[in-house]
Length: 453
Image (cartoon, rainbow, N blue to C red):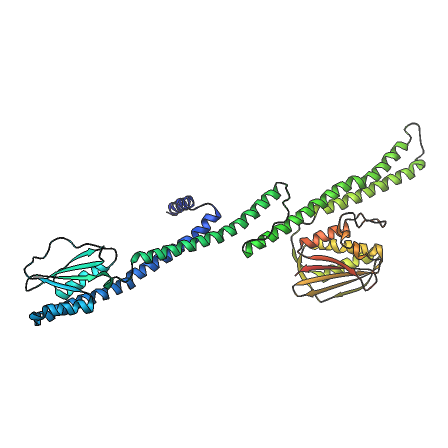
């Protein structure tokens, strides 16, 4: 039973998908059009079924009552029939005449659009308690009503149509249809602008995915679409920066490894290939080759760390104070001098612990190499946490503080390869944070890490 019901549901869904438009523009317009038509239909039904019927019924009852009052007056004073009919015509615009011996004409009454004919026939029949016949003269805008009299003959009343018409029904229909069409065209224009913004975003994403850089797109459309465009521009900038950094790293591999490889090649070329050579003679050359291999391993390890990133690690709630204390202890064991750790009791943030430990270790190692004395601070400011590292080294000139985050720009004679700050910045940005460099109160450099809590 459940399988049969699910089968019918799937068939219904396929039928709906087949009938509904596939484009976002078509579905958006359908969402606008259906409520609009329902609203206009309900308004038309309410007007036609209540207001128009009520007014038409009251006008028909008024005309039928005037005809009945005139006939009552004629029956009481037959000799004043002409004067009574003249007074009725003068005051009510209804012309009455009696054919004493005429038969009641056969045939159906003429029909018109609207409830006027039915209401007038009902009112006249109820007033005279006899059936009546209506004829509509559209050219003269008159209504002819014929009623058989109990005393014989036929009463004929000629009534101006304006006495019974409230307003043309087509006028209301035209107004409702026109307003619906105007609103639909306006909705089409607004929806087209939103769809155009979505289409531009999709085209830019497709072009960027195919390797063409269309540049940043201008945010347009609704707030959500603007946010999507801004997010796409940021993503595009991050991807371009990522590609540029990785390209620079790949170019730097051959550059940095060429020197130790050349030394190894020269050393091997200088080794004797014949005869017996004492091992003590080759000791210095072997030590140089081992040193070159160790340097190559260090370079390759740095490149792999930079290229691998920390995307596989899962963010978990972490006590930043405990993490900083752990890094400070490691820096002290490596020869650095940690003079202070200013921290609150506990500053929790959802981070990747190993990645954040790598950032702090790289920064502490830079402070140890360039200065030796360092101080840590951890504090929470609103919805963000700040980790501050101060050192007493030579610092970095303000003009170069943006450049040192690029690969190789921070390399110097102290043995670094210029990737430490680049790795730190990428990891901090991956956490949704920021890293900045300023002057330190210790006389060296201050590094400020801002992490969302």
